[in-house]
Image 1 (cartoon, rainbow, N blue to C red):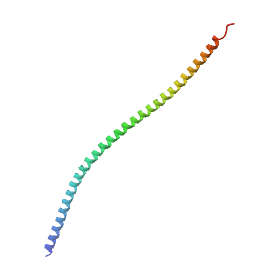
Image 2 (image 1 turned 135 degrees about the vertical axis):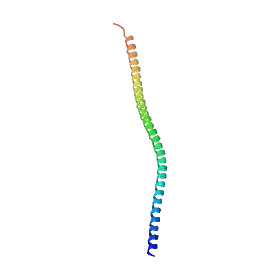
Image 3 (image 1 turned 90 degrees about the horizontal axis):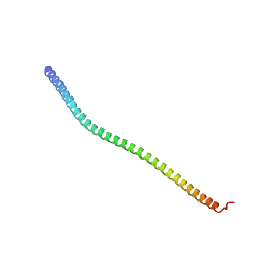
Image 4 (image 1 turned 30 degrees about the vertical axis):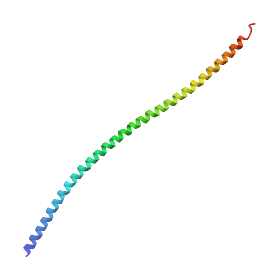
Amino acid sequence: MMIVATMVSFLALLIGLVAMWMAGGASRKAETQHHSFYEAHIKSLKLALSDVSRTVGEFGGQIVEIKKAQADDKAVEALDQRLSTMERKVDNLGDAIGKISTALSGQNPG
């Protein structure tokens, strides 16, 4: 009877070890499948993030160009205002010269 009990316990131990070995193999297989699945998704996310990063970089460059253009526009506006002021001064100077010329032509040399 003792021999039968020993054989049954040895058989139970052997079945337990085989079950653990099979569970470990299944676990490794599932981990490999999940790893490849996640790697595929991570790769697509990395590509998407790379595209977003490139697009943001392009927008950054365009924003810098727009700011430069705005600064140039402001400089052009300032120059236009200075030109208008100079034109008014030239007109005033022309009027003053006209008045002087009229005043001088009205004098008799004497």
